[in-house]
Image (tube, rainbow, N blue to C red; front, side, top):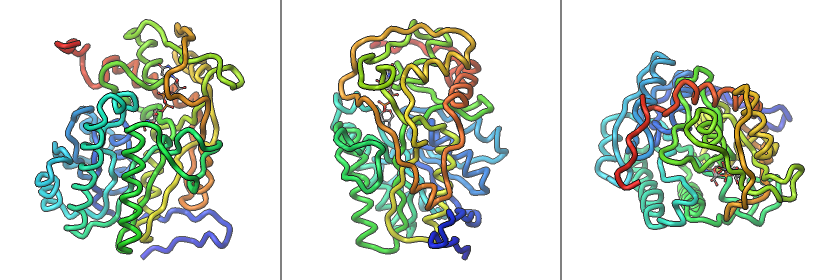
Length: 366
Ligand code: WQD
């Protein structure tokens, strides 16, 4: 068994890479999921993807395969379908799971809490029951900085009390609790809870990237759609925050750095039982206007925008204390906001309608 160098030496342990494993990636056709499939394959692992395709396209996996020369097995399965989840574990000798699958729009979760609790919680319980039944007890869970809620001081630190302020965030918090209780009750479980900050960017090839369905909720995909001519202008939600330029600050992280963070966490827990949580962020805040200027640099021309009122539920600023991921995993972000915008623009410019070859037909009930 590969041994990690002790942190007692004060030297960040190198996340020793483990041998080839077969990893089940739920939600693996999505934005972060597909980039993680690519990182896993580049690290030498075999990948099985389970996804219901409700918010993504299998085309992303075809393109990952182009880039890595490896093919992930794909199962179009909804995690709420427990027999179908079990069948995947019957078919493959899975060593570990990275769990992305779930609904993830904050605003939508406020309108449709039942769908969010059902899909995210029941889906996760079905996954964990199938894992336990098949003696698969290593899991990396896709959590979110949104669990820190609105009362914690910045930078956010993993040991802080959490308390999400929306149904989506509460499903993440409750899944963290489920996994913590499971790991504390049964020391055969190896569990990593990864709290993402704001993922943006795309693989530098421009072949895979973020492909939001409908009007993008998030800042950078919306800017990208303005830049490519799909949207008229960016509405900047609030210019009167107590920040250097009056617009809100967030901790943006390149999706490739984020994907690599999952591989590092997988390596770490491969040999360690117990439950651990890490922030995956840069440790720095960037304002909306700073990101907009950076995107304009990537595009090479101004992007129209208008400063409007604040968006309900938004915080003025938050970013990560990213020190524990560096100390434990030997992982930290490597890419700048400019690189994130360059890579995001390359994807958007080459794929104006995401994975759809042309503009999707307007939904009949639009
Ligand atoms: C960033 C900033 C907006 C759009 C959310 C979720 C979080 C995580 C990441 C899942 C804010 C401003 C945005 C626009 C704008 N998702 N903005 N105009 O809200 O920090 O985090 O996405 O895990 O859980 O809460 O990200 O990209 O929506 O907003 O001015 O059209 O950009 O007000 O200040 P957010 P975001």
